[in-house]
Image: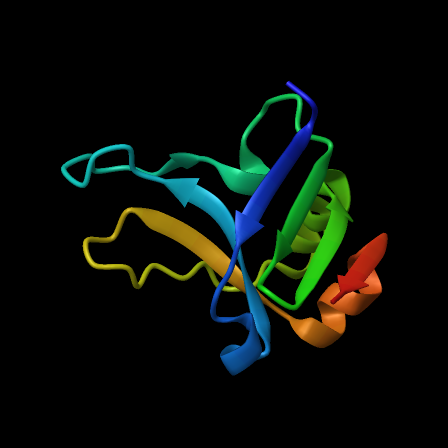
Length: 103
């Protein structure tokens, strides 16, 4: 209800990239992904993603514009494959974020 989506991403420190969700399957048996994360139509205005040390605050619209303009390859690698995402490097995240918080 507050317009924020918050994601914990434990792999940022090791991979130097954020995993931005764009689709999901509510059941692994579903054939198609449905819009989720930055692609879901809801009241989310801000997308916050980080780990134990750093968090980035994005305007959801900015991440969506980046995705549409650059169309990074959607990744489906979870087992079972229920999440669709793309990777955003820490360097690009630093540029797109409206604020970066480091502990």
